[in-house]
Length: 227
Ligand code: AMP
Image: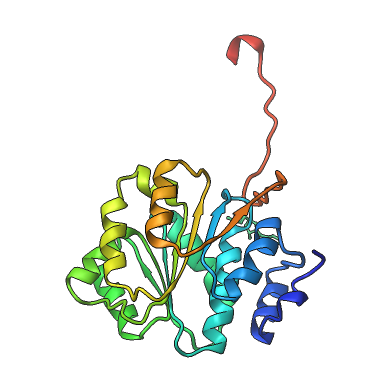
């Protein structure tokens, strides 16, 4: 696929993509975006470096900008990943959109998060533990959150977040769109998918294209005995 034009994205998103210098969709983006914009569930095996973050953020932001009734929540296994997703989301949403974001991760100030929630964010990104804290203390309502992303789902289950995921989903409307991204698809991920996804479009990446733009390479010459 040559560029993002075939997806009929909003002018705002097109501008943000240009700003990010994303000219050509990656394989996971080309395969996911058309279905996800069409409100279909997605089960994707895609690793970090494939461009998976924009593969789910672009359809979410496109839907949010064209439909006042769409709000999305993204669950990630770690604070660092949540922060990275929030950074990309901010750039894609743009500064003038009026769409607020909430970043709800453990180890960060609750008061700051309560302030974020008072602004009714339409995109929430966070880790399962802290999201559940907010749900239990009723500072967060997911009643109108009808777009869910489980990012790095295999890692979340490995870290023992299965229970919190189950709990979080009880607070969400059953009529929603769910996108599950996972590097691997072991039996427990397939079970999770069966439980929470409806007729998902299966996305698999054939190429070994990875865009690890944050990795630098260095050569260090050392003596054999110092290896
Ligand atoms: P991710 O797999 O989402 O962590 O993305 C890996 C890296 O690829 C990040 O540094 C992104 O900024 C970059 N990236 C994602 N999509 C594109 C694209 N379509 N064109 C160029 N770079 C991209």
